[in-house]
Length: 236
Image (cartoon, rainbow, N blue to C red):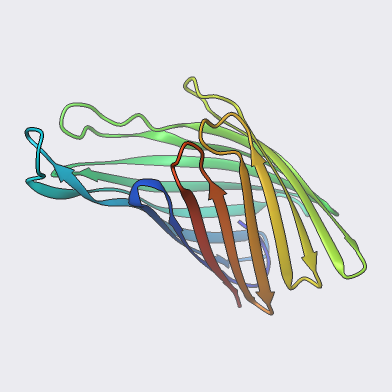
């Protein structure tokens, strides 16, 4: 969570491979000089999955959906260090089977001048069974930092973070850079390691007063197509 006297609303929509759509809504607002609160809604959905009992024409269609709703609290320990906690309700549905559960995220952030460093442990919890087996939550650790500088009308931001699912997942390194002109137009590029079907990313951002509009593009390999994300942010 970002601290400050202002509130923020973020809306995001992502269209990815196999007609998978992801939507996110996040709201942050301060409730004191050292405390901020946020609520979020995250949904991933694949529609019109075909049902077949035998090879041939489909006999019906169904949807698969994953939903996460959460509430977050951030506390500023001192001017440079803050900590946060998020509690999430999880729900998934595949055809007629449903399951739900609870999970928690824990994080810390250090910020001094142009340097920002963060550490997160996420998805600590469980979800109950669908029909015969429960989904194992991908508990993961993420840590990284960013550095920003300005020169004339240009602003630069450089960032990197490491990401690993704790139960045998591969370690991924994410790197990126941003160039902004007069804090209005932003060009972005990134690179992700150890993924089978993606590596390079690109993006564009526009900012006018308290309004932010962003676009991110991720091309996939092996004819998987691409991922396109659109987001809208409002600060007031």
